Length: 385
Image (cartoon, rainbow, N blue to C red; front, side, top):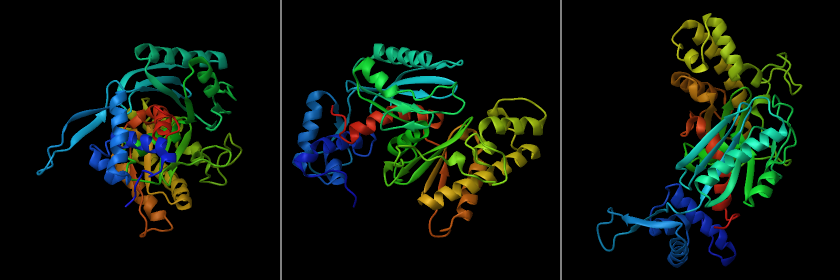
């Protein structure tokens, strides 16, 4: 059985963080469950829990009624007085902020639309939103940023995103740390969303998963062996620039036939409006999926998606795919068809299977993922509370 604790004084920070993770994510409710899940001694768990109770981070929330004989277990929960987390989402059309606790309960959120800002205006919008969150509750353990990529997660620099007003090499982590004197963690938005779903959402129980984000661009975040996957340059993988047609359209990256060129939200909206001869939001257009014209467009999308995604899954042996951002608008029957087609294309078809779902937190996965960049550091013992 896999355990999460380490019986060593050198790993006390890790053990403290893992106790918080088990309680915050609902995996463990009692001391006995913590002992069983983490593989630590009763005394180690009791000492850690006692410390958190004293600090007001955990509370005892009642007795577990399931126990029939002997002393009933007392349930543990995250205290309302425990430190909160600020999450920031930076994408092409908006900056959004959220204040939440370690259970991802949202206390405040606000968004600001972007209208061709320069670097200074963008960071001032970020500062203004963080200020509002801290005015609501200043008991905050850190600020997590979820940003369109590419992002160097080690340095916290937003590098050179395409179609982003010419903004590049923005040291968002350093700017936030200087202003607020709080820990800051930055990750690409879909990586952040994948982390959130792994900890709290439909990714629980899966050690190898991908979250696909479909908007103006197409990106992904990958959890591999229970950790956010990045390459040796501290960059996230790029499923949107896997070619599904080597003679296809020229992409902004220089390649031809990139998946992003054919299934991004603007392209899908254009194709659906052309097929129907009417305008509408992407959600409204997808809702007309019973018509033959819409069905044909969606079937072509599924073919391209299954081609690109099966290649990535074959390479990385993933067992879960989550459809994020505008992917949550895809009608459920097409989600099921996508799952079937991906599994038919896998090299290990019949041996391994990939589930295709929508994120538990829907379009909020990437926003809450910003907060999870900090929470993950707390759970790993990198940030001490």
